[in-house]
Image 1 (cartoon, rainbow, N blue to C red):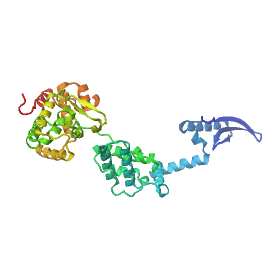
Image 2 (image 1 turned 45 degrees about the horizontal axis):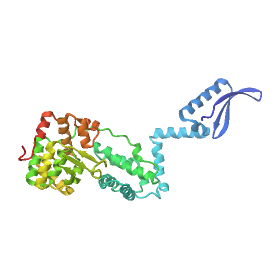
Image 3 (image 1 turned 90 degrees about the horizontal axis):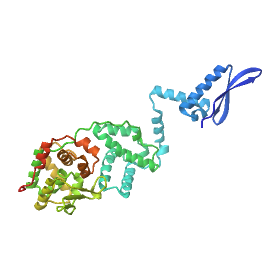
Image 4 (image 1 turned 45 degrees about the vertical axis):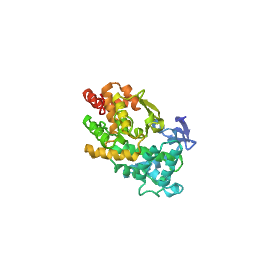
Length: 371
């Protein structure tokens, strides 16, 4: 509760005075004025300060309040941020002596994440940007890392990747705060990044047919993986870990186990008949499921060359399935459930990327010998 500020009439040595009463440094204080008007003006100023900053400010001695105002004014003139200055002081040897080295803190974080049930894929995706950031700072105490260090690292990256990188670094610093290795998370003081995302890249019908023909002729061991992600919409990593016994050809569904999914939730996909036809063909050809990651990466490099891509667009096969599937069915609910997306995400990313005519042409890409 705020201390009350009052104006009272006093007689001092036979003269009428007006006193402003308030609490200062835990003690009742009063200041005398010759007129009631001057006393009321001072009381009004103190009340407005109290309303703006609370009782803590007024509880300070007047000399300390004046000193703080002076320091703030000088810092502003010099372009010094007092919060940054305090953070730098906290990172001085006095505070960082017991703080572990950055590389040790990263190793401890990854161990803790693995012990808490996070997947190896998550740990790998987390470790890559953290080790990039640590390069050249490995032995630096984590408490000694400042906003400028983080900002400098992020500024060296493309704006499209900064949001993800900032999130990964923030995970590290939040962990360090929880462990008592540092007092703050420097990522909290960074400007947020706003990026307008472009529409996801997808394969055209001609490009998809070219991939199918080449895989069927040259790399049939990878054909099952390509069909699962390009026609059934599985994430590339999900398709890689799916086995043939997860595909029910009698009832036409695919079971995606929780341990293989990005969101750690089991789902059942009822794919388009064209997907099931290609899966049956791939199995007959001897395609491998699950597929070793190196085999998938090697095939992607070859497909990239086949299509003349400078690089393989991220998740292009899954985006392809989602776009043509949504255009064919018009049902965001059905496709979102199959992909493990929300309907809002599906509509935002895949709506109207292709026409119904293109979708019909896509789903007419049937295996050889299919009637």
